[in-house]
Image 1 (tube, rainbow, N blue to C red):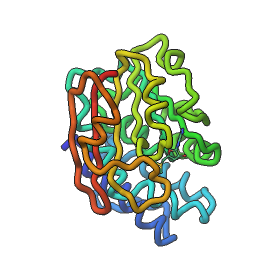
Image 2 (tube, rainbow, N blue to C red; image 1 turned 180 degrees about the vertical axis):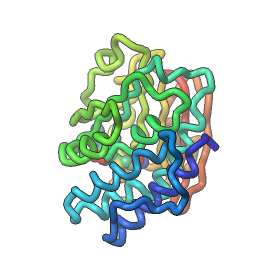
Image 3 (cartoon, rainbow, N blue to C red; image 1 turned 90 degrees about the horizontal axis):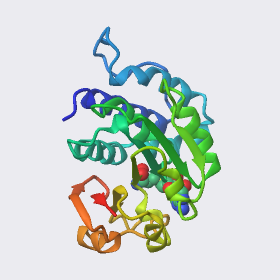
Image 4 (spheres, helix red, strand yellow; image 1 turned 45 degrees about the vertical axis):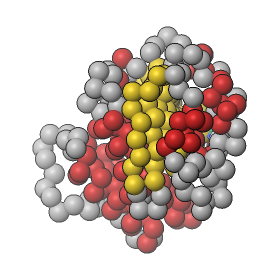
Length: 240
Ligand SMILES: C[S@@+](CC[C@H](N)C(=O)[O-])C[C@H]1O[C@@H](n2cnc3c(N)ncnc32)[C@H](O)[C@@H]1O
């Protein structure tokens, strides 16, 4: 496990539980004394304050976005990134970024944080909330309200090595159309799931093999399945 990941996971799950119960407070959940040096959990107090300032009606959805299934999926992604991948040289473009959880976790837990993060989501309201959540980072990522099916990927990847991350593949009604837009040779991290019980999951897949067939990656450096409480998460890391 990545150093600091256990502490950050504990704090994020406490936030999720409190948001879900409607009892979020500004205090840290852990009784563990804070270390003098900055660590992964140093963003938790500012994060609690930002979330407390959001309308209470948005808390149930925020609670889901910070729950164990989501946090563990992102931890898994960070742990499985290729050892030789130096994110400090990369722009990371997160597609379907929702409220910015992966950007927060990457920034705090990756051995070397990305040089630049861009978060894309089609929902302008989600983007507004993500911008506030991500303001807890010293160099907040750019948040872009856009449809990933319409983006100019060569332009998004210009000027710096770029890693495209799509952890919302199960939400794409035209996955093949999206996949065709990604330029050949691009580095890609994909996650999907077998959670058929959610109406938003218009592109869930039954297993990893179905996901691989859909993704058509000529080069795969990681393929795996993570059993979670409510579904299985599938992940592919490679190049187009
Ligand atoms: C429920 S969330 C994220 C679930 C996902 N497993 C995760 O945490 O990465 C899915 C997000 O994808 C966004 N989304 C869906 N279709 C999209 C599209 N075509 N372009 C950009 N964002 C999209 C939604 O607005 C939503 O915020």
